[in-house]
Amino acid sequence: VQLQASGGGLVQAGGSLRLSCAASGSIVSINFMGWFRQTPPKHRELVAGMSSGGSINYADSVKGRFTISRDVADNTVYLLMNSLRPEDTAVYYCSVVVLGRQYWGRGTQVTVSS
Image (cartoon, rainbow, N blue to C red):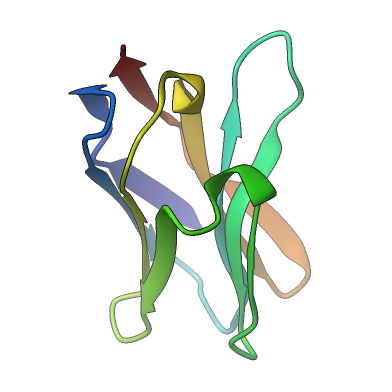
């Protein structure tokens, strides 16, 4: 399974960005699609995740500002980020779980200037 993420960049506080992540390869059934972020030395944290059953989880810090969505036909997951804050600055990673195995994209940098 390969993941190709895009959409990161530099934005001013209060702005918006949309991240995209397309999954390809031997995809039989995706159990989970989501986004994580990391700012060293912190651990990678879940930002938003969507299970195959449709349940969605958000980190408390992004609730009401970020929205995760999925295009089932294209195996693509999106993260719409509104009202961005400097503390949202991080490398964002998309991740999927296929048949119990977790895969990671390379990461895309999001920088929010104050």
